[in-house]
Image 1 (spheres, rainbow, N blue to C red):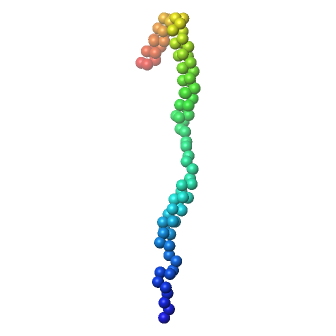
Image 2: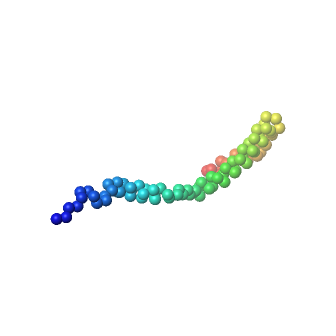
Image 3: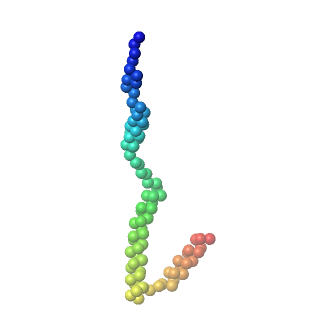
Length: 88
């Protein structure tokens, strides 16, 4: 009769856990990916317009503070009429 030593066959009780950790490490090596939508790209271009607008506003503020800004009543009236006729 042949007697094998009890528990001598090489079984690693943590092998399953080690395999799971290795698989997780392989998954972690994926790189992140960022996609910017068309609306996001448009918003980046709008930012350039806002800087131009901000410069114009600053110029107008200076003119108002210095008292050199003159309002053209005809232009204001025309803009108001155009605004209200287009929104109907």
